[in-house]
Length: 159
Ligand code: ADP
Image 1 (cartoon, helix red, strand yellow):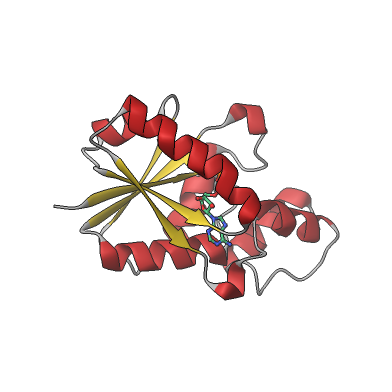
Image 2: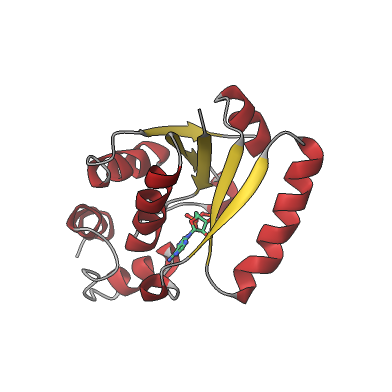
């Protein structure tokens, strides 16, 4: 059974994340979305809110599990019996940090492989920060994230 962990902050989930999730769900028997608590990043949405949004936007995928984690990613992957860490790659700036993490994780857990999925060209510019920024200025984010996220951002930002 091929189990992959797809970790991230998902603050909030975007069409870029959902595209990776859809493709991963076809590649692996089970995909575990690991929502990192990341207090140092000061997320806009709480861990429960981020999980709820992902859950609402991924109902159609039957081989998904969503869980929060803190601490080392490799420990979380081992706990979940996942042999694969999955990351999305966008531009060159992603590559440097991701490459370093993949090598360090391989040292920490040689039995776990990191696999990258290249972003869909439609979403290579997209990340959660830009979505929050646009929503903060009351802009239209409907081409960046699902309706549930749009509503949650409106509520959170109060516009
Ligand atoms: P992190 O803080 O761990 O980078 P993110 O929520 O920003 O968490 O991203 C989680 C994962 O999703 C990362 O592997 C990131 O590269 C990937 N990702 C985010 N946005 C996109 C996108 N538009 N296209 C492809 N992958 C993406």
